[in-house]
Amino acid sequence: MFHPADPYNMDCPSRDVLDLIGGKWAILILCCLQQGAVRTGVLMRAINGISQKMLTQTLRDMERDGLIERISYPEVPPRVEYRLTELGASLSELARAMEQWVVTHYPEIMENRERSGAEIPARLKLS
Amino acid sequence: MFHPADPYNMDCPSRDVLDLIGGKWAILILCCLQQGAVRTGVLMRAINGISQKMLTQTLRDMERDGLIERISYPEVPPRVEYRLTELGASLSELARAMEQWVVTHYPEIMENRERSGAEIPARLKLS
DNA sequence: CAGTATCCAACTGGATACTG
DNA sequence: CAGTATCCAGTTGGATACTG
Image 1 (cartoon, rainbow over the protein chains, first blue to last red):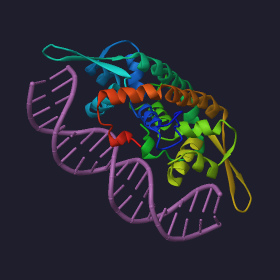
Image 2 (image 1 turned 60 degrees about the vertical axis):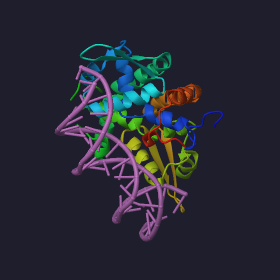
Image 3 (image 1 turned 120 degrees about the vertical axis):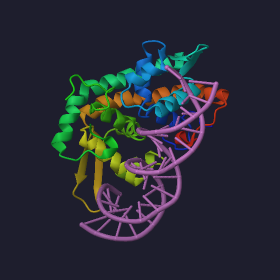
Image 4 (image 1 turned 180 degrees about the vertical axis):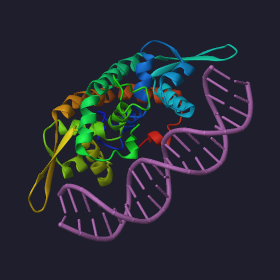
């Protein structure tokens, strides 16, 4: 094991944690859940462009790491909600800050991109 | 265009920005550059597991977005340094906070993972 | 040393169909 | 409605070889 955690070392599991946070969806999900417990379908619709597969997968990953809690109501049709754990809530603060940073600085970044004249690779697909 | 930026909308370019930040390497690079201007080779060695291809690619992306500056000295052999711009420096604060969060909470997450008994998918490869 | 180009195996993630 | 399983096209990213 690594004491302390060393994200710069590829063999330290903390690198995985950074990867999860760095995933395409985790930050958005964390921000959504700041409102309280949210149903699967609501998340689906809130996060434009996420597929059911990726939503479920990311939720599973986050649940496994203890960032969120899955609450299943024994009803028909099924109703499932997700809620931040205390751990997830603390991370969601940073997620919100990230999101906020992007919203604030995005015009400046768009300007820089245009000035640079560089094509935006599909990897960072533009609209 | 989108006013204000809306990362929840897949067609808003701010989503791309989130993707860059969310990439596997940007956060680590931002943290490294907090020390000041750093040479390519130093970054290579500091960030264990990154390939030259990914390092260059990520640096280009960040340069294009105006997060870092490339400084090339007309010497032989070539010497190149990268330095945070003001914009990048502001983001690096959040990057450092993220990294710090991971370092702090990683034991708890590892515990959660074991308790869950779930296999860690290769996608979040475990050592 | 820094960077580019090419190749290609491995993985990602969307679409679809299906279950309880 | 929530979730799983399967398929597979497109992308990713490491390895290698090469240039200035």
